[in-house]
Image (tube, rainbow, N blue to C red):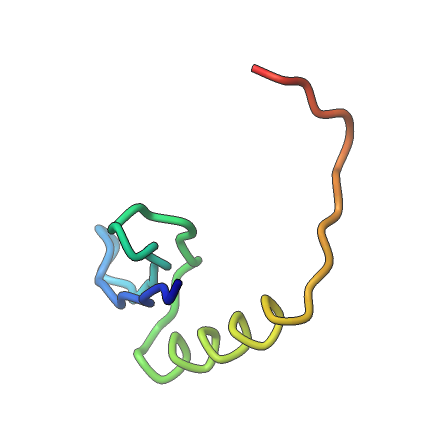
Length: 64
C-alpha cells in the first residue's frame, strides 16, 4: 500500500506536509517549514526513518 505525502500551507502561512493513506485517511501531519525545500528534505527523512524505525511505547497504554 503506497501512501502519499501532500504539501500544504497552514493557517500561519507555513508549509507543512501530511501523509495520506491510499483511502485518503490522514496518517501523520508535520510541523511547520519555512519553504518547500525544507519540507521535501523532511519527507526524505521520514521515508528513511519509517523504513527502519522501531516501535516504542511511552508510558502505559489502555484500551479505549
